[in-house]
Length: 398
Image (cartoon, rainbow, N blue to C red; front, side):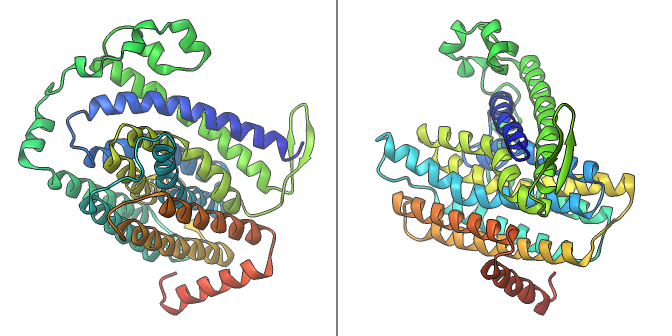
């Protein structure tokens, strides 16, 4: 029961994040309907699908109130970034090829290099910036500014005609968002299945007031369930914890960062996975991949930078003990290496097929084994961790 209860809560969180994420996605796609393909995936879709990481990191900091809370945020965002870079493109390709829609997918090399290089640069800044024993508000601000620069760059890559279309209000009408299935959707069924689109849009056309109402409610729903996600991860990481009606229960007694790396990151990345699969099935391959890469930039820069900025302004600087510094350095360096590897796999050859998909899944499986080994004090995993930390220390970037 000590592990089953929080695992059950995490499973519930996955479902609610998925349903609320669908509503958030519908509203955000309408708001950003005039963005070009690829740009929309890396910005609007990425932000929409990464809201769980923002709230999860925020609650980790404000619930645990110390460096372990920040490490939980790092675990969530870094784990989610690795999940996004490895699993999401792989399952998107497998979904398309399994359904017979295509044997392989072609993604614009320009999109891959643009988002891949931007992600590598952002993660390197993250690796160097979050390196001291004390973290201040300006660390969070710098991370957020990196994402702002990325957004400006993304907008500048659009053609002048696309920019004018985006800035021209109402360029795409509500008719283009009409869903035939929605005409037969009932509000009652929407409530029972937590289908926010049925509740807020119903059988009629979407418009700005409905889109923004849906966006706000979906955001609040994601925030509420992410609070439960953090609590469940905290329980798993503890030696013992107390729950009303259940009494004292036992956790795994491991650092919360390891729990967040696997469970919180996978739960918060669920919307990213669904969005990319849908984009791939509709033939929007640039959006499917750029959503994953763009989400990583958002996760590393904003989903961690914003909570750090807010927390340090309210509570003061975060003091990082040596063991947390080593764990953080190890994870950030590993994230950077795996990102470079993923970008190389994406850009070698003109297509992304099943072979690349299975290679990416295999790498993620090895990553999970490594994290499980670290949590269980496996000597092999410990040796790898020591090597990663020593490299970071040698170059004085951690």
